[in-house]
Structure formats: structure tokens, C-alpha cells
Image (cartoon, helix red, strand yellow):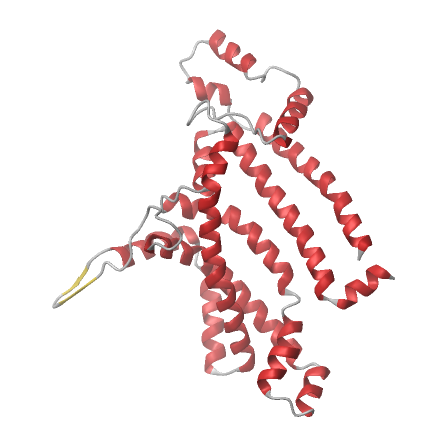
Length: 321
């Protein structure tokens, strides 16, 4: 076990350095000039060059990269150039990060447990109408693109519909942010969690079907254990082992997946900040969000490896041998 931890910790800074280098290079050599965007197309060339010199864009690439990494390690990701000019990027992210975290918490709390429960039910009711309905839900969750689901859902749930003698709606508010316990969070949390629900339902169903046919499950049933104990103590515990890998990618993927959702529903989170940065060529914000997102992926992968080794005794045995 200690070998795995040491190996992952040694690789962690190497991966972060590579990620930061690629991110910085794409920011420097990507399309568009951030200084020109900030000053406007009609700015005089000498003024543009002066501003470029003040921000250090005239220095050699490696000098800029070393300075950026050194400042980033101290929590300074530069300053906004286009929107909110002069404000520290770290302050902008710190202000919006709690909103994104609250939204993601709500998404995980409804989609992951429900997905696991539906997967277990579908596995136990295999090849029945319940299994067919659950698999149809999975296909629906995978096939519906977020960019198409958001306007349709907003139109159906937020407007008043006149059905002759019956008038229904509106059901839910659209847009804005009033906290994780306000009704405004229901639609964005549903849109973000639908794909996660489909993933966990599918993976749990497949894992449970594989585990239920194992010898130790048949032995547990032969001992006279109740079906509930067989499922919860023997089958589910081993079926959840492959889901640990998905949990890490889910947590990291929510950070990137909330870009369109936060922008569409006017949620003042990191996703909306990143969306505005990409559309306005906000140089330092783009680099900071990309670097933080990549770092989140790397850290969660490390946590997954460590958690997997603790959960699965075979990995502990192999690492110790």
C-alpha cells in the first residue's frame, strides 16, 4: 500500500507541471491577442505595445511561464483584462466557487443514490418490464444533449399553459441563484444530474448482474441468509468496487460540465465565469480555470487509487508483495 501512495505522490507534481505548461502555452499561442482584446481594435499600436510590456507579454516564453507558476503557487493567477479589469482572478474564482460546489452537491445527492438504487432494482428484476423501463431511462439520459434539454425543460416548466378549460403552470422558476435550498436550483440540478443518473444506473446494473452469479453469493443463499442480507452484505459491497473509479471522474467532470448549465440559468458560479472568459478571450481567467480543473482531475485520480486500494483487498495484497 505504501508503494502505491509513494508512486502516486511522486507522479503528482510531474503531471501538474506538464498540465500547467500545456495550459500556459495554449494561452500564450492561442488565437487572439489578449491585450488587443482589452484595448480594442482601434487602439494605437504604441499604446498596445506599452500595455503588453506592462503585463510582461513581451518577455520570453519560459520567463513568463516560470513567473506564472511561481505566482500561481502563491494563489495569484493574474488579473482580469477584459471584464472586471484589474481584479485578481483568484478573487473572482473564490467568490464563485462556493456556488458551483453547492450546485454540484445537490446534483450528486439526488443522482448518485437514485442511480445505484435503480441499477440494483434493474439487476434483481432482470429481463422484466421494470428492467426494460430502467434501461430506457438510461438510454434517454445518455442521448439527451444538455444544450437541447435546457430550453425545452425551461419552456415546459416555467410557463403558463392554457389547455382550454384547464390552465397549468408555471411549475418552477428559471434562472438566478438564491442558494442550494431554493426552487431555482431544481432545473439546473436535474439537467446536470440526468447523465450521472444514467451512468450509475447502467454501471450498477452491470456490476450487480455479474456479482449475483458469483459462487460466494450462491453460498450465502445456501447458508439460509435472507435475500436482503445477501444483496446488501455480499453482492452490493463487491458490486460498488468498480463504481469508485466512476465517482472520481464524476466529481471532476461536474466542474467542467456546469459551464453551459450555469451560463444558461444565470448561476453565478465558476462555470458561468469560465463561459464568459472563453467568449471574451479573458486570458488569465481561461488559464486559471483550465489549470484548476485539470488539477482537480489529477487529485481525484489519486484519491481514487488510494480508495480503491483500501476497498479491494487484492490490491493491498499485490502492493504489499
